[in-house]
Length: 224
Image (cartoon, rainbow, N blue to C red):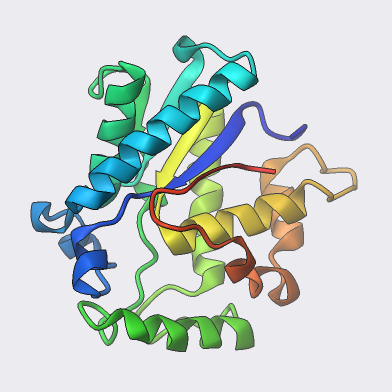
């Protein structure tokens, strides 16, 4: 992708304890707790994702030394990133693994926190109607776009010519794919400026469609 200096893959965390329990854990306060990390099945999914990523690197003639794992600070994403790093034989506390706060889960607000997963349908219905309208006390799709733009700017400023694996959550990753997919086709005088490109596609008609890029737990995908 010409306007990015690195090659990107996205990985949704493996099946987590909240997934198993069928509850929404989206606040930073809860998200970092150890009790909400990966379920046993999620650990297996994360290891498998690491093996898939190794094959992707081989296919693209990329070296392990060029890998950077950028992950959300939540316990389930950190745990996933740790599992992938172990498969790649990378020291998790080393320079190739970086926690990026702006990759954290979308906060759905106090009325959804620790509630049933069934409530996601209400949020996504609201997103489709108006992606600039947040659930009460939470983040709208547009809010997440702004935060992910900051995350990308941080990563792009720090790394050049790397294979970047972004380990995050369902909503942020589908939103990230939506904006990058649209931004790659943006033309104009500022077309090489990442912020301008994303700003140009931050439109209701585009960002309300983020569910088209949904990922399963533990699913890894090259970013278009």
